[in-house]
Image (cartoon, rainbow, N blue to C red):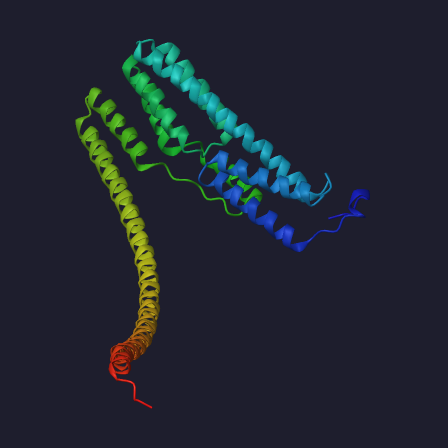
Length: 320
């Protein structure tokens, strides 16, 4: 890209650039493939915070693209929430049997989402089904059939191809989303109802069968996804169990070693205490024996001393 006056003093770090590009790719996937605009806005805001901390200039291409995509995503999120409120108002009018006002609300919500979110957004067939059901309740079968055909096919092919080419140029990871099978089954069921009311029973049966088949396929796909997720989770838990088992084995070995060392130390201490206690007992016994001998000697001396005195007193003096 051409250097400007603000880029002369700026030095870009490759690690920061790669981190920002990763965040932008995650945000584009969340916005274009799964239509999670709030998640995409979080990624864009995180990228903007990194850009500001790294002192990127305002006219840098990464800063310009991040700000532009952030504004577009915010606009998409706000238009989605506004259209959801309008749909709620239309549902209230439909429940009150005010079908004309309900048609107006659903049409406004459909146009807002088509213009802001693109013609391939998965919520558009749902809104078309709601419009077709209101036309069925009004008895406008031809208009309802046209709406349901539009829900199945979408816009004309040339317009769709042009818009898809533009999206592919903007983001190479773009993929055309398919209509949800449950939404398609509702569309086919209501088309069968129109054929039944028009007296075309064979065609009505054909649409009913197609509606059931699409619903069954959707249920099977959902079950397969849930089972694959459960298997993946069980594999993770088994690996964690194996790791925990290995750790527990290691810890048990370490604990057994420690317990063996403790037992040995205890034995040594017990033997030392036994030896010390036996030596102390022997010393006590010797001291007691010495004390007894001393007491006996004292008794013997005491008993001999009065006899000697008695002998000396009783012996007569020799005459000179």
